[in-house]
Length: 480
Image (cartoon, rainbow, N blue to C red):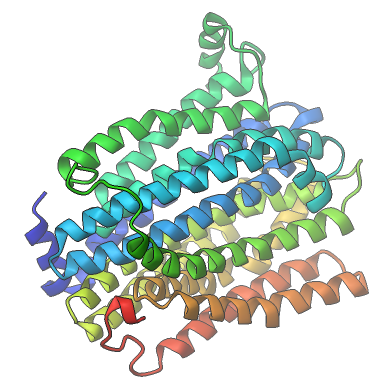
């Protein structure tokens, strides 16, 4: 890899063109990754009336729960990428490679901890924490046990692709994420339906399942397909990191470096806490809807929320793609002591994201009913989900701005500031709204308005902070 040319583009080339070239593959790749996840939801929705609705509701809850571990690990990855990009921007390639090794050891420990939690705590989490009932509880506990138990696979996949981005590579990490999702789709067709009934377009999996003696696993099959697909790409990804980027070589390996891990940890905990805080807010929404607007017999509200949250991950992942681009440009330019160029890159990346959020919102508003009916045709579910899209989708602009600018703050070595902004918004906007809705027993539409208001508040809060002069002051990473 031509590291000198990569540094030159980031530090000296056109920001608008450079960010478009670097960020668009990340944003589009993340969007395509969500497309494969939506295909998973489609497959689950075709399991039959007795199972499909409960399965969609279960994955709506479980995806948010499983994301907690991924986000904590991703906080470590973000912190490691921050230190890596600063050292790379300063020309210290050996130091950047040492960070990669030490942070990988930390991610492995996190994977072990969450694996134990998933294997032994799934039932308690779904029943006692989330208030899931009936078939949603039964299916969700099985699904959560596999996805969280195998979380180490997504921890490593996200960590190693994040390190690649920090070193200036945007296409290779996206390619591996897409390969993983293609494998996930192929395996899911076989595992979800087995030799049993399947939609006509996916009937080819029945013969494979029969030949391999794979039973019809339903929602549980989707979980196993995801874990196995990630395992399949980790080995080639490791060798590319080793051969192309020089990571994990003998010169960079060693025992835990307490000083280096202390720096990574100091940056990681507020970054992880910030992202977990956002997921926690969405889990509050899920829990309120499950407890106040569903019964063991009627899961329509949970099913609708499961569908729209899946659709919403498109906005989230696209914004994370532009946020990753901003992280790389901010980290490397700050490492080269170019504070104003780093600040400009934040606004440009946020602008690109706004354009994509407006396009996505227009698609969801214009084609919302057809999209929802693709997963579930129950009139009650469709109407609840449509109401959500009509209320929330244009607030994705605010969500995206907050994600991109927050990601840049993390790369600037200011994760506590990003955590503080998120904490204030959630504590002063979303949480009071949910408490009021619950106390007054307002209709579920009120919950949708509360979510939209919080997304808009993110954009306002981050923009006000960024308008403050001297945000990226000339300090070393160790001083931040």
